Length: 437
Image: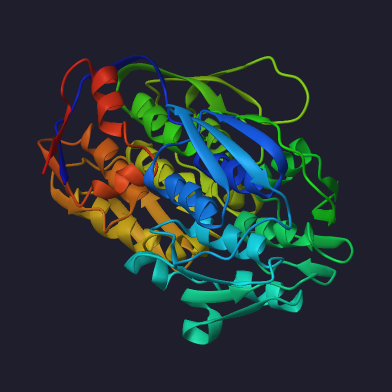
């Protein structure tokens, strides 16, 4: 499928984005490991998250879809999963594969995991290595560092104190999930704060979890089913918010979106660029995820630097942030983001290449991008490379380019934001984005 985009003069209205991708994955997987029933509302029904639902069903967990985004999971308990009858296909979902490795590290049977061509290129060794230290057997391509992989969990994983070389919520989460079945406390220390969705989720299910500074420790013990409300995905919202900032006559509100401070670094970065943002947190109590409404209005943006500890808190939003930088006054420098090269695509190379084809002054760096703002963008034929966030970034850039932009290979958007084109058109009040086979 391709998207055909023409520039717009205004955007306006209030919308809600689909449920948070990261939280949806965790709700399904932790619910499967809990004892009793878990009710999930707002689950992201996109390809990646549906892979996690299919995976827990393959492991013997009873899952019932009660309505759009509503699921009932009859948890099997930490020791109740069963050996699957077939290979589990994670599709394009790195979160499914990596978190499953952690959950399976304490299951004493063989499970085989694979994925699509893109996922089979992505590194799994940094997850597998600490899990092997805990006693799991993980074998496969590239010395057990690439899918397909086979994993046989330990009867009782051994205690571990692990220091992550690179801040990674997925690696941290995999180790914590394995620690639920361990023979003693398991701790993970990060070099910088990554998103804490797993910690919040585990606490909500009753896990004994302690965080001190950059170290999180989980003590083994059972989980209890609960109700999980999934807020809107800020990674998806970022594209609509950036559109609201770069179109001159615009005022865009995204309601019910997650405001977890370990995930909302994109709001800080946009604020540093002079973005007109209004944030209205919703009232909440107890454990779980904060949420609220974010409004973006057409703004005179200026360049900024994104680096260091901020990067893990906005790594998935950098494609959207790069588009904002294109129209800003001055230079934007993105550093310490080499992780972008091992996402669904090499996002550093893809952004430099495809946005450059639209007239952007953007240079690739080993660990990021250098963007000279203010270039006149022109419509062009560009390609996503099968990466949903690249596809959406190119589409948003097309809203302010001269002439028509055609983005090829956009089926991938369905992995996280199936309603993307529909919501953009609703905000534009016209068919600014046309989908073609």
